Amino acid sequence: MNRVIVIAEAGVNHNGDMALAKALIESAAKAGADYVKFQTFVTELNISQAAAKAEYQITNTGNSESQFEMVKKLELSFENFTELAVYARHCGVKFLSTAFDQPSIDFLHTLSLDFFKIPSGEITNLPFLRSIGRLKGKVILSTGMCVIQEIREAIDVLNTEGTRAEDIIVLHCTTDYPTAMQDVHLDAMLTLRKELGVEVGYSDHTIGIEVPIAATALGARVIEKHFTLDRNLPGPDHAASLEPSELESMVRAIRNIELALGDDGIKQPTAAEKKNIRIARKSVHLAHALNNGHILSEEDFVMIRPGDGISPMKFEQLLGRSIKAALPKHHKLSWEDVI
Image (cartoon, rainbow, N blue to C red; front, side, top):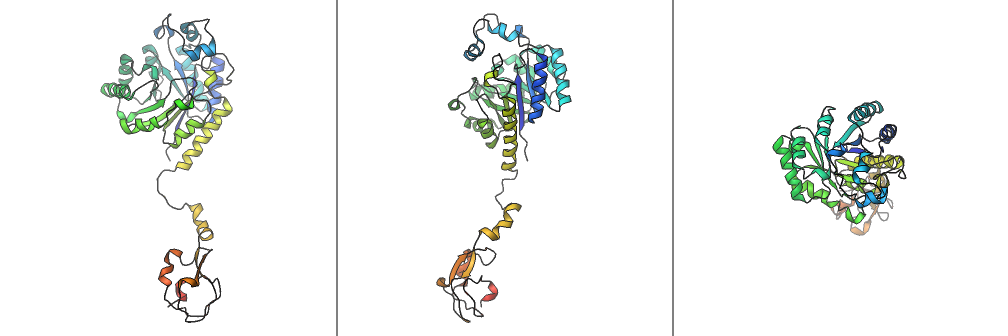
């Protein structure tokens, strides 16, 4: 069975508070996520003092401060992330973080993470892509706001710098918080797999858990979803995040879908079904009592349960044969009954 990688995206929902960050790690572990993921950045290297807030950021945090001021309050130090990585290991969940600048890439590389996550906003950042590509590790690439040619170009850069195509998982994503259902375009995930020849997944920003579950059923290898301890907490991303019980429900549903999908694609009776074949199917029985030597015609047959006699698919092979002995109504015919 192919296990879906579930990434519980804590992001910046720690609000700059290490105690809250550790509580998020505990929640991700309890929910059964494979990874808990944060965001590592140096604000001054990412946002100018003049950068405007996104509409959703204004909705969730107001407009009394700049984007720079808002994000600066959400910045954790590299030492903080080292501590969180250790704490995640202690809690039994793997640690990831998304880098947004070169010092953050260099730092996270020292943690020997399983994946480097490239966020949607960096997919057109050539120096950033080159830096990640040179690490020659496994990469998860989000594609919000992209057309397919931009994704191709980003993958080409990663490949040129040494990252193998088979080590890249491309996530379909819509960069809007929350994403309206009509803007999900989940079938685009299948287009990415077909056109790019890569493993695909889905990074979700909708309200609820339906779309990640649907993505799993469609073959997503990675599901990423924001979560929080409380959607009412202040901050830009809490409102579009799952709460702990919802995260647990999503992970449980994904694991159930994994089981339901199976791993061989063969249509055949399961072991559980086989015992029901005799009960549910029908076989050839006599519609009425017959005397010894009677020549069988179609009117002599009735197809009723149980299904452990001659299959109705073979009843024509009985036509014109004679029975060896008198038989009662609803007798289940066998090949031994006829000559």
